[in-house]
Length: 175
Image (cartoon, rainbow, N blue to C red):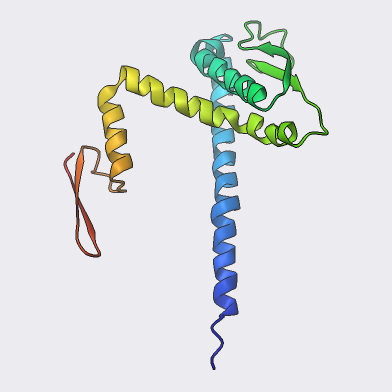
């Protein structure tokens, strides 16, 4: 009886999964970090308070996301500043902060550290989603169409209609 397991194929699959789950997000985060640092440096060079003007709303949403996650995971918020207006006397150059503490012997608050750290991903995404719905309904409608009928074609910016055959799904998009 032939061996149904192909070790080479299993190792290739494991390597691909590691690449997709670990390396790709880390590379993406690294690229975003480089872009962010470059942008902040250029803005600060252009005008001292440009970070506050351009990034103020995002900073408030970012810090509120951390704070909400602190409350969900039963952390005590010690100090919170949603937006630091005095950048010159700020040694770490951060635009805001949330300092918190928790009882380390309990599982729920300990698990919360991860979620508190990544909370701005969800909070800022929700804010972008909500503001787009409120201020740019055509763009919001395009997003919803894409979510219902995903396609990776560059010319598929407009509304799409889908028809499904037995094995194939056909999208016709105008754009």
